[in-house]
Image 1 (cartoon, each protein chain N blue to C red):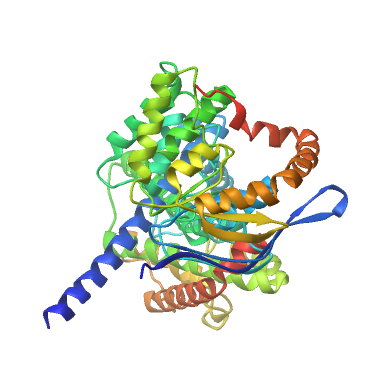
Image 2: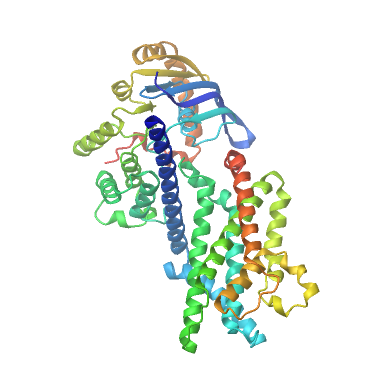
Length: 259
Length: 273
């Protein structure tokens, strides 16, 4: 039997809202991700799915419960992370390479980041705060495709589809496929074709809890039968909150063509 | 037997790989910290070195102007530089350890980076800076008088490393205890800023103190560090009641306790800050 790489036990997570309010995102969620599993996440509420990814990668702390990680787990790719705007792209890439890269492959991996980010000439050696938001987002994607992890956690911001630049789309897809082949995956994305292509299992989160667990086609069917309707209503509520927060809009270039 | 050896070999390899990874992370964090300081400061990369150097030189100039000849056995500039550099080194490492976890919170987005890595990185950069300042002052003085006197470089190096360890140990211990009892953080900051300045031998030599008053200051391990550094430059410089053993004991004890406290409270540090 394959070993458990990530285990959440009775995990609870809340988010703070303005005026001292809080909202539950995960309630008593217990979930184990085993080696080799490729699990898609369907959710009636995007923030609950994101919270699950963040807790599974230990990016966000739990309010209660426990998370145990027994592998090299990625951050929710391609999140912005803690890269510094006052540093150049190369300096940031070098820093991440030292933390997550393969020793002895510094030059190759940094060159690969530069290639995948497809920045304008000279931009890679300029401060990141002088870059536009799309360049920055492309850099985040490039960084996420270069390092080797045991478990890849992919968020909805992953730019799977870039129809305006088919060559770069192919480059990114190839890099992604090479990276995740044979690896454990936890994937949340709006594009169900993308989910179906890589995942053979799925979980459905409804009302902050795991409501269904099973094979991908069954979970997808269950989700559409039971959840989709309420999801549309919740998404409009979610949008209202996002509309009031410019920072969140900047953080969500999932609908944007990056290349 | 072969299986046992293989398992042992794998275990050793895992430990070595883990240590190599931690060294890589600490070096990367130190480089990042250096770039950040250079970008934020007014004078770029050189400013990182010259800002603390200028501060120290001002202090040294004031002191030398007030009283030109401090002790007969050493050049007053070197004598004062030993004290001031070691005090600043200790203060900066220990105070940064106290506040470092909160400041480095952003970095914990990357799971591989732990609070201890950020503390070690900031200790490394301070150690590099202060060692450079000390070497710069020493070389300048040597050129000025056209003579080099460093009687025991090994002792100077050990003393410097042990002082860094002591600062990390005290900083980490105070950080963890201060997390449980917040007044400890305030008291440690007060102690580092006030009491250490007057008991670390920055402005006096231990041998000039009357015997019965020495125990009032020799409890302070930083005094031992400063005096041993002076002694390593000129072996004729007397260091009564000062011992490297005491400094080593304090450094190892503080580091040991600090690491025990840290590892039993790491999750608390991450979640609370």
